[in-house]
Length: 160
Image (cartoon, rainbow, N blue to C red; front, side, top):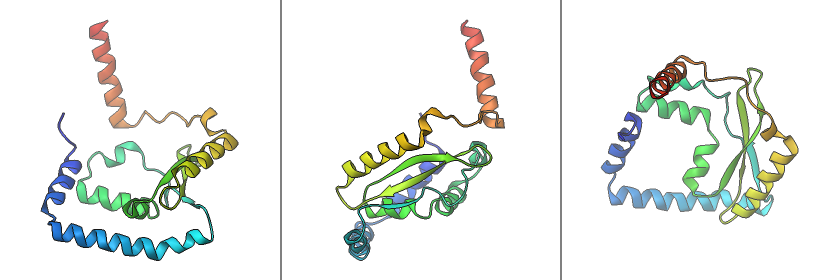
């Protein structure tokens, strides 16, 4: 199965990085972890929105290239991606819907080795909100997904 062009672009860029560049990046990661970790002397977990804006519709990314997709993801998730770079655990939990019926969430973030606590808190939050019992409005009528659904129906009709 061929990779999406954006994934292929990420692979090419990754291959351009030398061991020296990666070593320096990892050293910087450790320094940033030290600077941020003091917060866990005050709190056990940080809670933040998963995204800074409502989620885009699926077809909004259909014709974007690598650079535009990366910029959109970074703008949409200003809290999520830095935590991933630190290598610390986090979990995203559904937290409701926008006024347009699109799902939104919160991110629970902790220090190294806090996965059991984060999973427990996420389960409690999901139980309290009852999110799993609610479903978003129909979202699969976007042009790209409608085309895919029609193609699948045509294939099923041939098989049937």
